[in-house]
Image 1 (cartoon, rainbow, N blue to C red):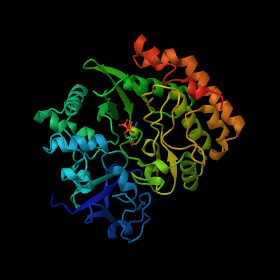
Image 2: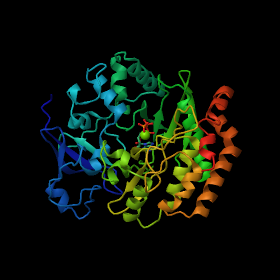
Image 3: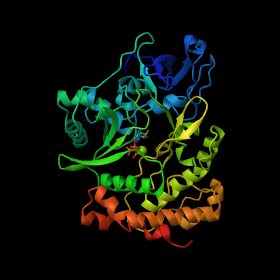
Image 4: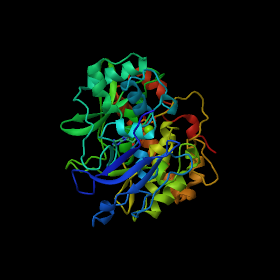
Amino acid sequence: MTSERTGFVWTWLPGETSPVPCGMLTEQSNGSLAFQYGRHYLERGDAMALFGLPLAPTRYLSSGYALIPGEVQDAAPDGWGRRVILETTGQHGAVPDNSAGLRELDYLLRSGSDRIGALDVQRSSAEYVPRSPDPATLEQLQRAAELIEEGVPLPAELDRALVHGTSVGGARPKATITVDGQPWMAKFSSSSDHYPVVGAEAASMFLAKKVGIETVDTTVVRSLGKEVILMRRFDRPPDGTRKHVVTALTFLGLDEVSARYGTYPDILEALRTHSDNDPARELFRRVAFNIAIGNTDDHVRNHSAFWNGAALTLTPAYDLSPTSRSGETASQAIAYGRNGERESNLNLLAKHAADMSVTRAEAHDEIDYIVGTIRDNWSEAADFAHLTDTQRSSLWGRQFLNPGALRDR
Ligand SMILES: Nc1ncnc2c1ncn2[C@@H]1O[C@H](COP(=O)(O)OP(=O)(O)OP(=O)(O)O)[C@@H](O)[C@H]1O
Ligand SMILES: [Mg+2]
């Protein structure tokens, strides 16, 4: 157990390139954190509320099984980041849960400062000291990720470099990296991959753009004999400002335990409550595309929105990653129907399209366009993703356009 009891949340206000302190986190006896805005921050004319934490001198406690309240929840490292932190704090091979002796506050204070969104957590409210990793090459980051997966202790020079991987969520090995002076994200192959996961995600990003889903610039490079997917970060505009990002887990008010009860209609409703433009068609397109490419891991942390203090707007799509699949029956991670319908089938999705404010005719137009576009562009997408002939034929008809997704229902 450590002696850290408090931490300070720093935020990048809209249009600003450096952060200001906005509030304090206090550790509770169960390891959860309470948040309270600082008086100076509340007095600022330009103070922006973090999502779920209205500007008020209130002490916000986390609720349900959540350990961190509001938008700060999304700043905490996820599966991969926690693994790296445990490794780099000498807890070789430890499992990322509280039994390893680290609590939420420790993870927040030890992860890199270049985290997703526009928040950071610091030990002081007076001075901002970013936890910036040593510069590292793609090969060094990839090698370090491989060693962690193999359970081999990291050499010191790689240890520092890997802070790059702790500030980004998700379970798969990854790192933040600079490409032509701009922040990008690298996702690596994993030793546990039973099919070309990186290639399948790259092909999906290519196809998503073709069907009209908003995506970031993506490229595939070969490094240390394996493919690596590189994606431009959507939370870092080129002018050095940072965009606030909240996952659907947070904007639906869910925690890790209740996460599976989130639904697409809930996401739509939350976005509409906080936004002027209507995301119904874009969200429907993303569900249909996920079904068409066999991505059944479309959980609530794989959907996010930008937050500007008043409105939520969907971020570009990410983690469009076809899931391992053997047969023709599958289910989406969250339901698209009001009554829990989640079968990975496009005709059933069309039948329940009204639950997402899309008419049956619009749904069929969308689905026909997606299916047609995937068929027409598959070969180009597979080239883009460096897929071999064998990999293409094993993915086609299994993950991509599985007969079970297309069958009449
Ligand atoms: N292009 C991007 N720009 C900014 N943030 C991103 C981008 N892509 C992903 N993210 C953020 O990084 C997190 C991890 O990314 P991603 O979901 O792709 O990883 P993963 O390890 O495959 O996740 P999972 O655990 O769902 O399998 C996301 O939850 C999202 O917050
Ligand atoms: Mg993810």
